Image (cartoon, rainbow, N blue to C red; front, side, top):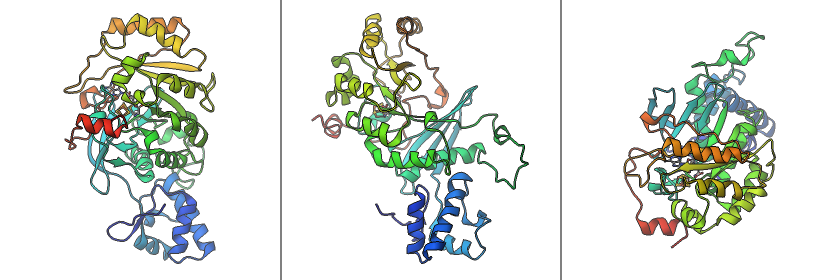
Length: 390
Ligand code: SAH
Ligand code: SF4
């Protein structure tokens, strides 16, 4: 895979692994030894220290820094708009170099801070309850644009580790906190279907997980899929992060309707792929997401069928009260209905947290993401042909 230079001819190194940076440096004229050393240094500054300019890389010689600056650039997604919810949730509307907009959300909690990362601009799928699903797929995000979200969040939260020189030895992690919170967890639950952009998501998450890079544990990363069955095993093997599956319905008829990928990969195949997911165990359970839609999937019978379906799979169930958006064809289930549903699931032995809607005042809740300027809605025909259903 080659790297497309920017309009000014410089190459963006953000999103590249160390070996690739080294190749580019030697192609630009450094000898092997230099290329290796400089790649190592640049990689460290890039992903571990969050440098956004070669000028800041103080252990690289003063003559080398301008040489790098002339040929390379360290990108970040451009921030088109930043919003702050009254519950502390933050949302950023970001813009790619070629002008497409996508979103990222940070959700602070008492014991963690979760970044919700996008994998695509728009989505080829069209789950009926999802705002992103009403957008066309504009394009896949690149590894740099995916890892760039995590880096931008760290920029905004002021969370890059200081170098050894900058802080006293006994300073602990908490001293790096801004907002009193750290970015501790990542969920691939922003815009898009991550398993339809597998290679880029994998390459980006490798950088996030690399101990010499962003160094976030794979146990703190969750990838959510609507059920791209053929890519699920690869996700476990090649990425190794936690898996969340957007189940949302317990029979073919309803799932075909609200999660249309079900017409391609049915419930049985999906649950088999979950049972086979590499690395799943009682200490690393698969999360089944279940959006609560009034009179659609929220009866006691649905709850009982749900626990039957997932029998034998190390699982937890995440109940998500439907987040409404203008023109949505569903309503949120009533609270007592959600509670009754949760009780059945809980009594069957599954953790069944009801996810508190966050950032609703800024339309940052799960499934509400849609770029503000993207007005193109899908036609029925387009939806069906994109999903391979037509
Ligand atoms: N494409 C992936 C990941 C992005 S969506 C997937 O579908 O899993 C992240 C989660 O939000 C999914 O479980 C999705 O079904 C859910 N979701 C989408 N729209 C929602 C809405 N309006 N209210 C509540 N949850 C929603
Ligand atoms: Fe795409 Fe996920 Fe939204 Fe479905 S729920 S339309 S797969 S982003």
